[in-house]
Image 1: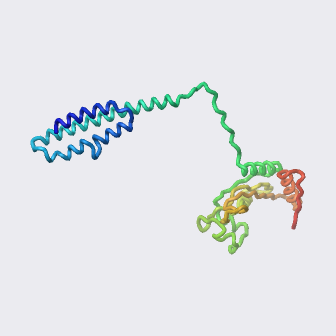
Image 2 (image 1 turned 120 degrees about the vertical axis):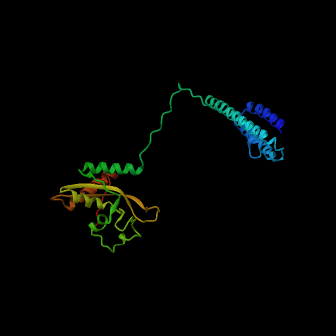
Length: 247
C-alpha cells in the first residue's frame, strides 16, 4: 500500500505540473481526489490492512492528499493567470483609433405631442399644473358632483387601492385642488396620465393621457372658450384647420 501511494504521488505530481488547461486540471482532480478517485479507493481498503499498518498508511494518505491539493491549487493559479493574459492579448484595443459617435436618442411620440400642447397653451397665457396620480375619492368624484351610483365610481370601471383611494380616472381633480389653493384669476391646464378599467384595443387602454383646461376670471364668456379651442386646433393641426362647434 505504501509503495502504491508513493507511485501515485509521483505520477500525480508530474501530470499536474504539466497540465495545459483548467479542464485538464479538473479531470486530474477528479481522477485522484474525486469521490470515486484513486485516493478514495485506497481509503476503502484500509480495513483490510494489518492493524499495525493502518496508522502509518492513514497518515500517508492524508499527506499525499494534502500535497495533491496544494499542487492542484498552485497549477490552477498559474493556468488562470496564463488564460487571463492570453484573453487580454486577444482583446487588445488600439486606443489611437477614432471613437464611435453615439447615436442621439429621440423623444417618445407622446412626449413630443405633450410638449407641443404645453407650448401652445403657455403662449396663450396658461400655466401647466400637475397633480397626484394616486388620488382621494373626494377629489376624483365627490368634489366634482359625480353621484355615488354613477358607473364610473364602480370597481369595475376604476382602479381602487382602498375604499377611498384610487388611481385617478381623469385630471379634473387637479382643477379642484387648484381652486382650493388659489384665488381668481386662474388660467391653467392640467395634463397627465389617467387610469380606467378598459380592455386594451385599437382605441382603448387602461392607461392614457389627458389635458384639461381651467380658466376662472371676470368677464370671461363662452366666446373665450371657443376662441381658445379654435386657436389651439389651428396651431396644433395647422392654420387651415376648420373648426365647427356643435351644441
